[in-house]
Length: 155
Image (cartoon, rainbow, N blue to C red):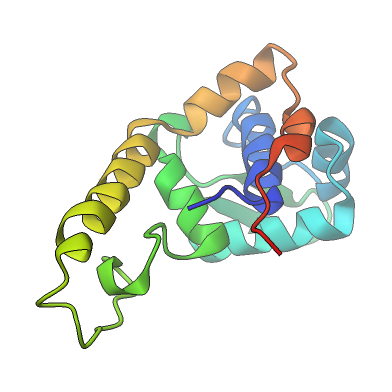
């Protein structure tokens, strides 16, 4: 599993939204300005987060976006799954998007290495929440620098 640029942008937006009162609707323009995330891209991210019940939205005058729950109740695992789908490195070990493999019953590496990788990633992402992102947002931390450090697959 690798974090994507979209994950980083989602973390930045959620950290900002988490600094706001849950009852305050924040416009996409305000989130974009506060986070530096290009507004059209941000709107797509917020739509994905809204579809999974992480963010709520309200249309019209006085509308905008807000966290659907308290920041501590939204795990980073939930966020990454909303943005990227499966956390597992392979579909044969995915808990939510499992695709059977003909070697599943015989594959030692699947039963040991791949499963442990999945479990470790899930454990870390479930251990931390949007509240951790809020801590950074309140200190003015920008995840924009993370974008230059994202690992890219070999070409």
